[in-house]
Image (cartoon, rainbow, N blue to C red; front, side, top):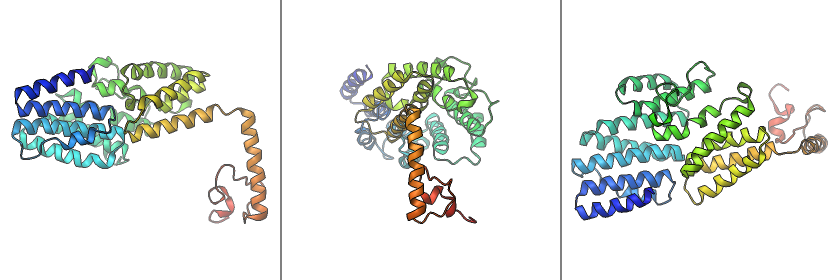
Amino acid sequence: MHRGWLTEAMAAADASGDDAMRTAVLANRIGLAMSCADPEAWELVEELPGEDADPACARQAARGLCNAADSAVWLGFHTRVEGLLAEGRDLSARSGAPYTEQSALGTRLLQEWWTGRWPGLAERCEEFVAATADMPFLASDAYVVRGLLAVAQGDWGRPRPGCPSGGRSAGRSCPCRWARRRPAPWSASPWPAREVQAAAEQARVAWAVVAAKGVWPWAAELAPWAVEALARAGDGATARAMVRDFSQGLGRGDAPAARAALLWSRAVLAETETPPDEEVRAGRSGTERAGTERSGTGCCGPPNCTGRLRPPTRSCPARTPGH
């Protein structure tokens, strides 16, 4: 549907002879291509006009660059984000587009979360919320990052991340990227903190939203947790279907984060579907290997040093300081 609309918009923009309109449509094409992990998206980014463009074109180019940076964060292209943000913010400032400039700052908070730059991040989120008090759509980035930090640091008393209301408002009042992703980080809670069946039901609901949309890179944060929830709840068939649909949906998409999530999902599936007797055999095999290592490969650890499934240099007490 969106591709059809864009085709019509491109034809209308070309017919208009208006460069600003052409740039606006190009920015929209970039947004869709990046969301879908289209390998050609980066070529479209290169087509955006630069600093020599007139202000009207520059504003649209800034929007395209900042939106591309946001998508790059979620796709896992973290090394490309800073360049896109720098150019986008520069064009925003030059052309008088404060909203776009603020959106870039929200994306930076997300980038800092994903790349582990956590010191002072909660305070930067609070500052951003205050600066965008009249722009709740943009403030949602800070609310979500702050919520994710709270979950990671064990602050379970903080409201559920996702919207300025703490997740209590309807999905339609949240930015679309968070309405589609909100269940994913919340599902990342440690398993002892929630009932497995309840987690499985939430996973089904969240997965249905992603599957209905059909933009599979958006499932990257959700997939591993959804697969584990369903598998642990005894619904292995649905968990396997999730992995299959995720793989087929990604196709040739250029999405490092989603590819990693797919691998993680497959690993979770393999782990949860390992029959107990195979685990016992694996343990015996590990013990036998350890005995061979002690007699012939230099491991001088005690008899209970099995080295199970890990290299001796990491698991053998004999290789640790002070042993």
